[in-house]
Image (cartoon, rainbow, N blue to C red; front, top):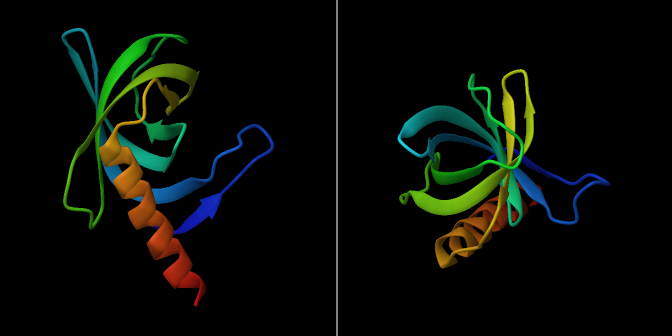
Length: 110
């Protein structure tokens, strides 16, 4: 974790992180690197060309966090090497990791 960021386009805090992501679309498996994550979605570095609106099964890990997080999403942004994923649901495991990231972010401020 490095920092948190907000923009005028989203209402929720996003945390810049180091982590890995596996996207599944049908039988296709796509691996990528996690850039940021927040309650509403994530940004991923990956080389796949994905269609806007496409549903994806996501599993991601954050460096130093012991669990893999599964979540359902939809492609909301796709540009050269970057994919934005909006979450369709917010499983309990996502709440837990966001609390963990927030605690780490606040500790960095002290």
